[in-house]
Amino acid sequence: MSDTLPNGAGADITNWRDAPHSAWAFHHVDQVVPCAPIAHDPGRVQPLRRASQEFGASVLTPEFLEATSTDAVVVLRDGEIVFERYAKGNDARSPHILMSASKAVTGLLVGILAARGDLDAHASVTRYLPQLAQTPYGAATLRDLLDMRSGVRPEGEALEAYDAAVNWDPDRAGAAPIDLRGFFETYSGLVAKPGGPFAYISANTDLAGWVVEQATGETIAALLGKHLWKPMGAEREGAVTLDRGGLARCAGGVCATARDFARIGQLVVDGGAADGVQVAPAALIDDLCDNGDAEAWRTGEWGEVFAPISRNFRYRGGWYSVGDDPKHLFAMGIHGQNLFIDRARRLVMAKFSSWPQRIEYGPLLRTHTAFGELQRAAAG
Image (cartoon, rainbow, N blue to C red; front, side, top):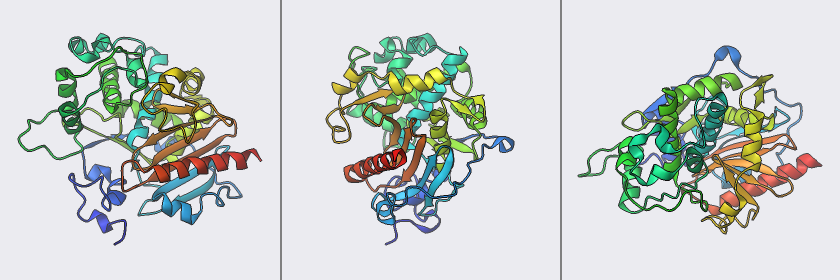
């Protein structure tokens, strides 16, 4: 059977993240779950020139692309497209879901807003959401949420309630519908002191999104359009999924084309600037690259899992940084969504996939290895 279904035949809320439906649904998310558009400015598109010579074909071979269930891949070198491929019905106009790479986009947005004085990333969550004072989130800061150091870990029935609240699944039989705000207001589960070891909890980033909306009085979709998509010169409109109360799923629901995903990477390479405009502060980009807590990662839950890639990891604002030589930064999401950035070599690789399983360690390691090969080739 083909790994993609014509016109999404049979894809719906019950199966959109399962193969073979996911190969279609991942670039038609707005036809499956509620979404809000992220506006771009058609008169302000930042062109991506195509380089005179292709780069990376010896690494990103047809066999590699198939083995890693690739939907789309765009490689930029010094801001030019040096490699671009699409499969499974995707093309340059297809907005594909980023899954948890959305956390990196959220981290950029929060940093931009903090630099503008629209919010304080080091403030307590309860400064903006006082109704959470008596919940386990009462002691956490926005910074703790973004860095996965809130100390809060929903498990068991609480995790099931969170999964229901994000609005990516059909309602559970016999369960009262709940949205993300309702989940956070009623959660009373496990908690440790904030600021400790890294513990990956997607709910942290969704709560950060609510904090942002409360602090600014604007929706995440509107803010992303105003402060990222438009000023960086996005080529196409993006989107973000919504819970039943209209709150954006900042932990995993952002959708973008592969080229615009790569533009985000180029923005980081260029120190937050796009076409001479400082979209994100240069200090924010440096912070994401350099200021994650190495000890929090080393003592956290993924230190050993990622050891085959490197033991020199940090996590900051939704971004993973690797301090090896060569250094690089990346964002990632389940089912194979990746954005790799090497600032020194001015190299970006944006890759969308539809892995059948949420996590597939073989394709994950191969993808990281491939980017390492591109880095070495770029250095030569």
